[in-house]
Length: 196
Image (tube, rainbow, N blue to C red):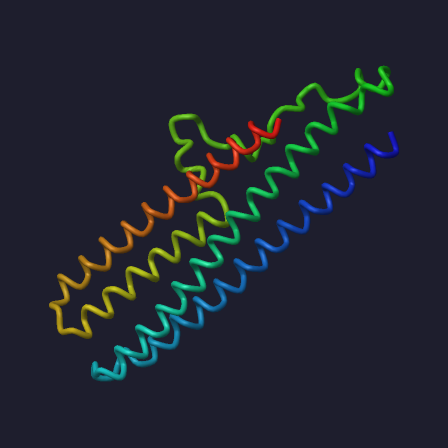
């Protein structure tokens, strides 16, 4: 029983560490995004020039790269957290074996955590947006779309076409992000099934 409680504590600590890292990375990205959006805003009143376009593209491209790396790491963190939660669930099932009297006192609802099943099955495809990785990926898609639009305007593309390019590139990036995230989760599920 001492071993089980120690392992349970260690897994809870690892979960807390992963959640802290995800929140820290998200905060760094959102802070950089906020500063990065303000910087080109100061130039919005000045006449458009090649220097302004280059500056805006550099800022937005840097934000897109930072967002992409944050997104990828947050997916890894979420999968690790899921693994820790699953291992804790299995430990809880073992608590009743050395002490059968304790089994009756353990909660009967030791299924998946509620946070894993927040949405109805028809809306489960939206579940990825509710994660830190999903949120970062969505904001990164918007930043990348803005980057494409600024670049298009730098080449003197009409505003309506540049706005359309922004929207299309943002949507395509968001769709690729969602597909990648889903594939990573399915891969983690397959790996878990193989190891079980």
